Length: 593
Image (cartoon, helix red, strand yellow):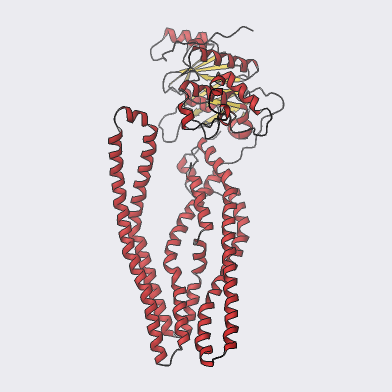
């Protein structure tokens, strides 16, 4: 396997091509073209009112023709009805298209963001925020503004045709408004960035504080913590106040120019009427056309800023989808597969770290065996467990299951065969049953039986049936508060055991268990081993390690020993300096037979 690229290299450079995003955009292009046609006629029909008023004032009033008035009023009414229908249709099309785009991209994008954690190619929850931004732009008024902007010169041209002085005045006002909008955007940008930065800092600190509530409460840190947040909020409020004050000034100036423009063109029109160079109807029509021409000018500045942000969001979505390729190698799923794990010169060095967490190692573990992983703190035990479980890929070298590269295997197939429990377990939103069943197998008639079997093997069944709604209890704050750390550990052991996986990787599964809990886990692992499962367990307790077939002893990220447990433990006992402190505890010897 070639060395993986760093996140900066992966997420930078020219955006790669995402087939999924291209396919979605290809489906949206005909709709966008149809929207352009509809917006063309909507903007064309905006001429209805100025033309109608010109005809009423210059023709109907002078001719006193009721028939003409009725005729042009009917035409104007029909045009306004068509405009309203087209406007409604465009809004519906935008909304439905945006929702379809979101639903089409959400699943692959979220999956890519999660899988991207393997190689540092993930934008995390930011990928979903980027998708929301794309949806909001697609369904919001920005598209309408973009389709209105090209009509500004058209309306100005019509005004100029009515009289050159109308055109000169309107163009001048348009340039002034556009300049004021640019200045407003420029002077507010730095303050906006500062305010957003302070707001993000406050939100992040509040989240971290809530996670450490017990420590802060016990040691009286809460008042000091809140005081520090108050200082940050004060800085953010100062920046926000600056933004509001500046925008108030420039917005008022733009509003004044708009209002003066209406007064000015009417005054200019009245002068031209007195000079017999324009009609009263053209004066009124020029006023309306000027309003239509100027309306999208200052909005276009905001639209351009939004489009820049949307373009960056689009590129991030594109990179995220393109960075993760769908793995297609599949393990044979007929019968009960036996999984052999083979490492060849496999090492792991996180991006930016000067030395490897795991140095190159070569070993093979056969199916139906249990291997203990032992080592001092920071020796690489957890990283090795994550490597074997397929959570992180080797930086170089290879990790294969049944001679197939783990990171080329189809994720769903591999996931069904693996049971994994990390050191730190977190409940996901859902019921107890959902968490144990890994949120799957909803249509499986044996789902509940498998859930109960896994809970019984982990020794948590009796605790679950004592909960208010038993297995249907939502794992929310109130329910979690009723479970001890030992019970939570058993719950997530049950998730690892669910479906009788063929590869079990458990990181310190007995850290919080009493002797009875340890005995239940040892018996469960013995059952898995007898069924042919391959088992890896990070542990520090000699009684449990002696039940393993082999023990991998890690020191400073390298394999210091890989042998039968009695031999490894004897070597550690003879040379205790620098070796892990073994924890005496429960567990049982491996049963004979």
